[in-house]
Image (tube, rainbow, N blue to C red; front, side, top):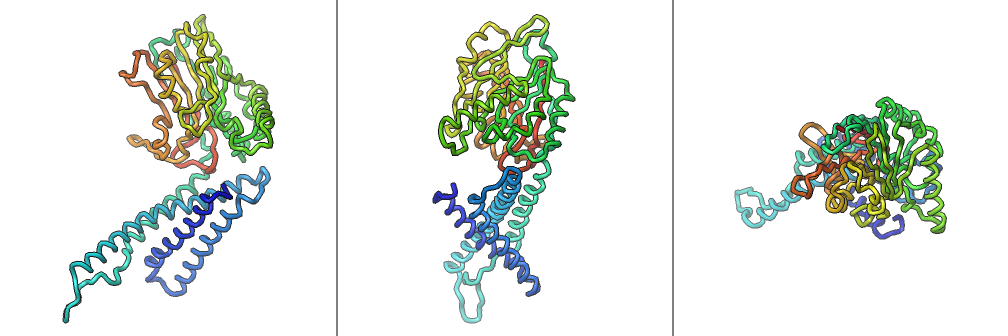
Length: 423
């Protein structure tokens, strides 16, 4: 991106935003002493110019693996400052619109007459209230993002009970741990990750299912974590699928052969950990004489920018006579796009991918994240409406992700370990 016109347009926009923000800063600081204003203005411009310079040179600096977290953190702070100023600018624009309307009204309806001092539209000052409001909102956003750095390993165990009329009796009470989006390339604290794995084992699951994005880009990112995640064991096994990041799509490979070799190494990582990677196939799970089918497909997204390697038809073949089916599919957009309309006997779909954008609000009565404007199903449990086909129950659970990528933190949407109990 660094050499594209968009990149330089973005940097230019940041510079203009800095200038615009400074006009409001002068309003709120007008009553301060000259010395205080000098310190405040100098600090502002030093930070703003430094942020732009760092952003310009950051793509050209090659960081070693152990320093990549520092690079990501620096970039996240710069991005946080940018969005904080952008939020503040919304209030400044409202103020400028007010000033514009007031100026036009002054020109059209007022005039100066001898002995009168009616407003003529000249010298309309900025609103200190709106300037302060904008800065407070922007500051709150930035502070929240910085606070979120400390949440990236705060694993939250969510326990969900799911009821199905057609679940075989031997599988009643089955405990499934569902995790997704490990993104090992983002980790910097191995002990913290191990504590997350210990939380999973503490739940004593019958079955562990992982729904893709083991790495950010390359298989080598798992080298330091194979001996962490190989601790995951369950009586019915540990099964996994691939996500969009697992294919190395976001790396400039020297050749297509190198890209394919990376995927083969990643498959070997799954095997080394004792995970059964399902590549457009299914397995049969047996318990107490009853059998159900577990299907796993490669990444399949209804969004054009993500790969579509999944083949549900292939995975489904041979499962027709099993009374209950679970599908692992990384991208939740697959559920409404293909599963619900074409495979009504797939009872439960498990997905991840969205991370809940690692930013949002989840409190009683409120569930919001910016990602919901891209994905209708983005976190938690979803069920097929009664008028969407056959009456057999179909449910989707979207895990909020075990790891993180991009922004090295989480605000409101914590990393998740899901415990599903079937009945």
